[in-house]
Image (tube, rainbow, N blue to C red; front, side, top):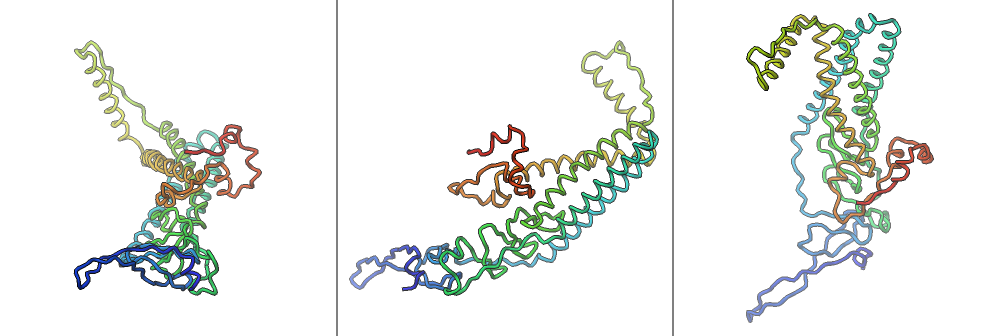
Length: 355
């Protein structure tokens, strides 16, 4: 008997067979199949859709239907269009922000102008470089493992590995196949169309740095544009509302608000093109920054618990919980282990948590 036959757990099913004397007899039926990982024969139930080899530990999912990937080229085209739009949007932010804010800041003092140009240059370089690294760096291919034959695959050599029917090779538990990229990704978090790439083991840190740099940049743009707009906004011609003109209570409040809004919109008509660009940059930076702050907080939360987004979705209730620890954040960003001594005492006292 092969090692797989002796080690693999076998399950029995009973079927009813009609005999000549019309008596029912229950018989034990097992189906012999071959493990894809080590090539050994395994006895399994004919109704078992998933079974695990007792020798190599590979998991086989029977009757897997490989879906058609006819929209792969459209997905790639969609991702490239998103990347071009994001790049053009960032360039507009950088060039438009410098062009619109430059004269206002330099009118204050030469030092403020040089400081603004320096900060804007640093944020622009960091944002663009982290974006291109996240977008064009491979997300991370799973390591190559030996499989297919018993002398090659040792005991537990493919523990909890499944077979990818798209790539035709083993897939580790921490690996997911991305149909948009057409390959398996190690520690895949999600596929982001805005970078046209998956977020995986090789570029996850670049993606987080891109989010951090973009959030800081949008915050800086919002502050500078609001100050610049306030500096160049035309004077507001308020019309005095007499509270004794028959308006009382709520009617008076709505009248004052309506008058202020109309005055504000009339003054906006006299804004130069530079001012309109500043208004758009302020609205866009606040809206984009708010969304990215939520995404960054979610990503850091998953890193804190030692998981990815897809790992969190595929977690089983009975699965062993990964320890929540600040060390997960330090390891993710490549900080040395002894860097934890510089953390505040509040964080060091809450190293691990249990639900």
